[in-house]
Length: 245
Image (cartoon, rainbow, N blue to C red):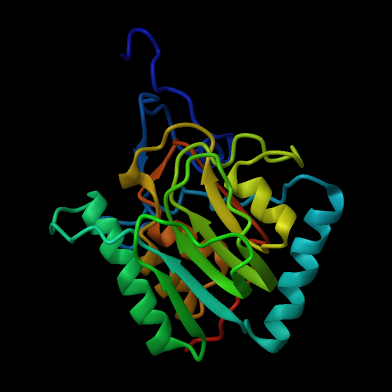
């Protein structure tokens, strides 16, 4: 694969994180040395976030909604969509990530005053059923956004699925990132090519960082496993939806 150049692609944003490093292997990924579980931190890593979306108006609103929400605090309902997969205790397995979603639901009830609603089967939240959505995290519908959400200002979250950030500027895209931005979410993340499950920020870990008062880009880099890989973070990098709880 290395000789043929397979899996040497990555998002521009993720490569920018590595711009201060000397030569490094382009095949697949590089460890994110700002991750909280890294054996040591290397402060050459740059934290990169993207202001982008289907229109200029949407991007402008991302910043305005983030600043306004910081003054009032994020309020609304958290929607967590797991699939009922048993935890097999294997890191980065389907069961592991499904358990992380269930743990996120418990954590959100404990750390915030939000009502938490769960979908714990293979079904997704049905269209029009998620009113006042402040947090969303779940899976799995590849490149087929389900218009279930009425996002409040400041809402954030992501869908665990491949290829959801390929066509960010297409207002008619059915990918989750552009579609959620069009529907009013303030911050999200996604992949521009097949990332493999183990490269996603784990849901419980990512939102724990936010609940601890971290800003968006800090929470992302403290929990994303790799750089020089497929992900982009979308939103105001300094957005801090929660004061330290």
